[in-house]
Length: 334
Image 1 (tube, rainbow, N blue to C red):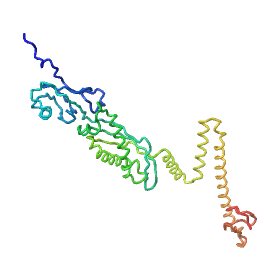
Image 2: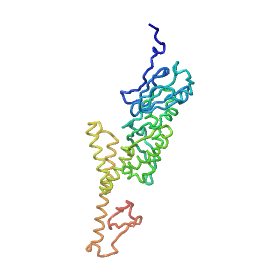
Image 3: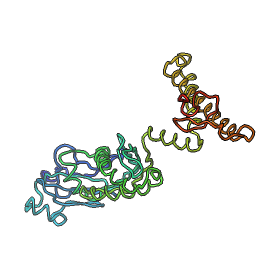
Image 4: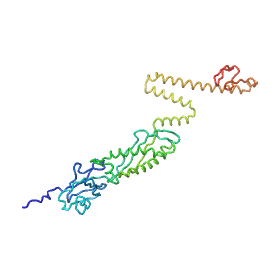
């Protein structure tokens, strides 16, 4: 019985890529070393995958969906590069990269810090935003050249960091479609469209594209929202003094319920309550006094002699004959 052919003992190999976790965008197979490709070696490319064959730092071939068996006639490019003129008696040592072309959905993005933007009606407003986007690889060769480099794996989390930085840089430009601060929430779709168009113009150079970018929240900072709420409430109440008294009373009640008896002894709270109450009561008293003065001066019985009228030399307000101080300005009557 003759000796077995040495070539028949060499493992021909089947190269394929699976990712149960579903987070890998690109991976080198095998992870260490190089792929030993013999004549007859199979490379299995699943749906939504592509593979790049890299030999001595050059792109030798791009393989799409299907089963690829290495033969001289099937890989004329790498045959020419490697000069395989002896029927693949020695292996071709090369890098084999698999790329996932599926859509990675539900990726999150958001502002890590408020973005300062000036609207026509309000200047230097801090804006926070967050949303979702879907992304996929459209050109594996560009992605390999520009982002992967010498890495062994390229994960979706690595890509998210890159996209997040680009979105934050472009976000102030997308806000230009918002005309006023009051239109901020209504303009979320417009901001989304502009932001997607601008980010795709950049990502195209990296072999990537974003699908269905969404801005789910677009709001000013908490301080601005509180100020806007107060302005709306004040306009509804119609009386600034009554609104301030209502706010002060609510503040005292909330502090009492949350902090116990200690908050009731807070000097600042007591001083604020006293000053506010004094100003409101004084204002109310002056308003009633002026109303009474006007009624007394226009009464037909009392104002029989027009010469009996008396006016303040400082503000010109009407006062009674017996008054020594003006009820309008508080100055002494001369």
